[in-house]
Image (cartoon, rainbow, N blue to C red):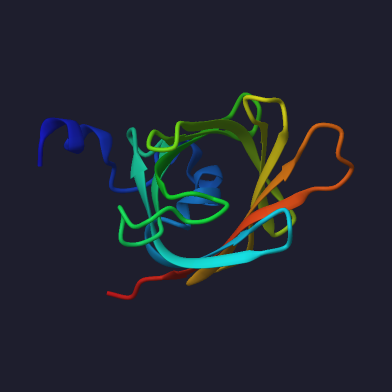
Length: 173
């Protein structure tokens, strides 16, 4: 393993904030995903993908890679586009929340959000470059599965619009 990979990756959570780090730490591992993109006109498109979570930065953060659709390089996925991006999720004890940055250089999509537990769910909120509100939620969280929802609230709209839903199942073995 290169020095970079060895220094980036961690074997587990940092003991200083171990309990708080489990909010996203429980996802560490490899996941298969079924993605449904929802068009503004009510159309739905589905594809399979994969998600990989790991501990990084001395166990102070969780990083993931989302690849949709699988295999990478396939024709553009309607509505949502093809994702080959990464999220860096860092717990910030000064706000008792997570600072989240998503990077998808192939689509030039970059998002910053704040994530917190909300009941049994995890909700991340932020804005797009154009000022639309975003809400990404992990729901129905179990040891071997979760449901992720990507929503947007454009401009002066009153209601959230579901753009993408992801149902993930943990890989065995």
